[in-house]
Length: 264
Ligand SMILES: NC(=O)c1ccc[n+]([C@@H]2O[C@H](COP(=O)([O-])OP(=O)(O)OC[C@H]3O[C@@H](n4cnc5c(N)ncnc54)[C@H](OP(=O)(O)O)[C@@H]3O)[C@@H](O)[C@H]2O)c1
Image 1: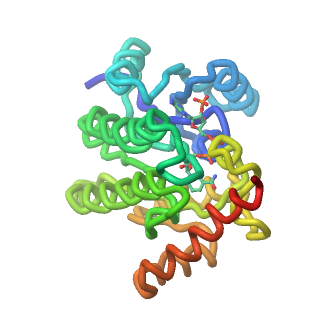
Image 2: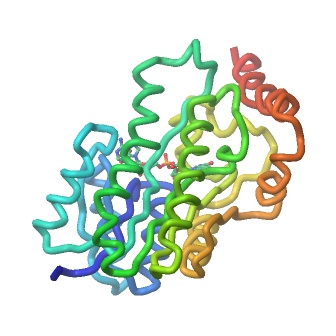
């Protein structure tokens, strides 16, 4: 297969995805960046080109739409690009009780966080395997818990973690790395988009998106299967199986639903 090797990063117009793009570019990778906001992608591409790296290819796409992965494949093939590494970062959450949140929005979350991530992985896997590249999936520390107040979101991230671990196992020995990056609360537009204001976790410190991106990149390049940035997050992930779910759900519900009640 001929073509230029690129790292495809979804959700690169903001937050962790934009910083992953900066880190990959800084380390000499050519990029293709995708999201819905073409103007923000274009500004990031200018910034990266201004730093002396090649200008990333841009793909404006709503990945929650059916057929989005095919559209991305066609768009990149038309530009002569071959995806050696795929970074599935695009995703969003919604805060509130399942019964109160909009049904279509909750299903759209599954479309983006689960269906698009899976379809993109399957679609680009032949190119990734041929290049002995890799797949970096952005999960969350939410993947280790059940999360009343963000129930569908936590479940989507549990899928991402499980899928990534199993795929990593299947591809072991082929020289193809698969990593689940599991950040804890991180300063981005995520909580605003989720309807939670700045964060439902009150005074709990939030990581910077650049620190998360750097730790994620380093772990991916080292071939780690699961990367949890930050000591507290690693502790919470490691001990998630030790406390009964009924107990952890009490704590999580108090933070995520209690805050909403307090705001009303
Ligand atoms: N922030 C946190 O505390 C945190 C913690 C753990 C995990 N994460 C995960 O980290 C990832 C990145 O989130 P973030 O915190 O950086 O949030 P963010 O600042 O809201 O960025 C989300 C990115 O996803 C893109 N996106 C959203 N809907 C899309 C769609 N339908 N099609 C294509 N792109 C779409 C957005 O671009 P457009 O709006 O331009 O489409 C944006 O680039 C997510 O998977 C999230 O679940 C975040």
